Length: 321
Ligand code: AVJ
Image (cartoon, rainbow, N blue to C red; front, side, top):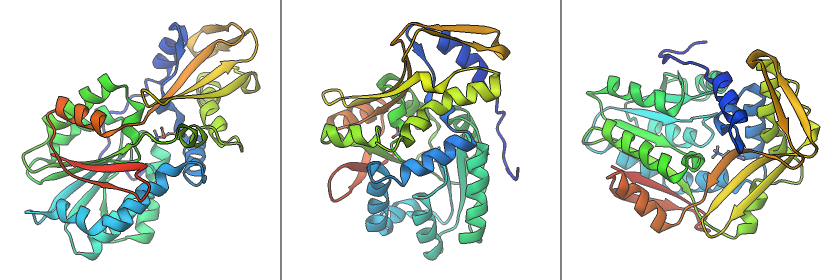
């Protein structure tokens, strides 16, 4: 792959699967959704009418791209644009195009756990915005952080879009924001999306579409275990289950075992037993309100410099520094 900078990337997949499936209650990390099939399913999720997050952020970018990019270019003739969990760049491209049109000088560093999606992103940018310099970095958010200092000398603008932060529990989110802050220099900015609390029905539907795309996305983690770790999970014997707690704002995805069953994972030399209705927690997608965002940013000693929302107030992007 044409990756200019490649961080030491270790697939801890096997180890984490072992830990998660021997833990009580069972759990698997949502970062493992994203292989070629998972990337494709997530792109289909983003295109679903129920999955409002993408459209909200697109609306915000279309409406406020001048003001947002004013912040990026303020007081500097060049900057690094580092995007954590860039995916296919669908939303970012609006900002990239606008920055290009206003003749900003910047280098784009999309970071993602999926090599496949970085290849797609790079190819599509070569086509659509050939003059923008793109340096894909494959790795987790935490690995990407370690690499931040290497860009010292040029101001950094860090993008963390799509409410990706919602995959982290509050404690983890604070630790992560703190580490980001520690790695930021004086003029660096963090531009970050937080999905907002709203009608609980709307949230639930976004993660529980009738067509079964989210179900397939959730089950893809088992498909990956089968393919990469020689597992024999029967995907039909699991149920996709979504819960949303409107008080805490926490949405959670589970796989629920419909029957008592065992699965073998040959590469891990592991036999996993499930009681009937036993669960695997696969994802947390946190929804926020102003108080929560204020609390998280204060804990990380980050200052809210500006905020942008869509016409429904369903989603907010914040500029932090
Ligand atoms: C990419 C983590 C923001 O939690 O909303 C979409 C992933 N999971 N549907 C989210 C996801 C199920 C998404 N993030």
